[in-house]
Amino acid sequence: MENETIKGQNYAKNRLPFTQYEDCRFVNCSFSESDLSNVDFVDCEFVDCDWSNAKLHHTGLKTVHFLNCKLLGLSFQDANDFLLSLYFEDCTLNLASFYQMKLKKLHFKNCELQEVDFSETDLTSAFFENCDLNKAIFDNTILEKANLLTAYNYQIRPEYNKIKKAQFSKEGIIGLLRHHNIVVK
Image (cartoon, rainbow, N blue to C red; front, side, top):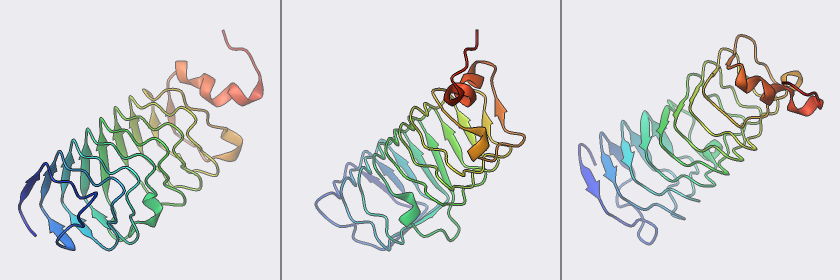
């Protein structure tokens, strides 16, 4: 399917009718708990959609934008990594996992990323613009040149992650020191 706008559909109960969508826009659709395995989304936009707990085995996400979407508990590492390109704005991604993914220059804007697993993920030059990273997991994560100037509630242990030339605000420095039981005033 190409160049279509799809509104108000519930794919939680009915599987998507096609396996490839190109230049499509999905508005107010539910994909919650649905099986999106082997579906390709190319240059697609999702607005006000719910993808919570969807299955993403070999799902193609090639230049996909999520705006004001609910993406709880998604295992993005199950998606097809060929030409993977994502952008998230005003989204809730709590409990999602990006384990061992290469996500250079990934952009999150105004997102809730609570308890998200970024273990062993390459986030070189990623941008976390005004994002809540409460209890997000950073373990052996590459955050070189990443921008966390306006991110908050993160706890990143510099000794277990690569943070060379990453940007943090003065207020955010506490998130790098919290594990050391030091007091910063």
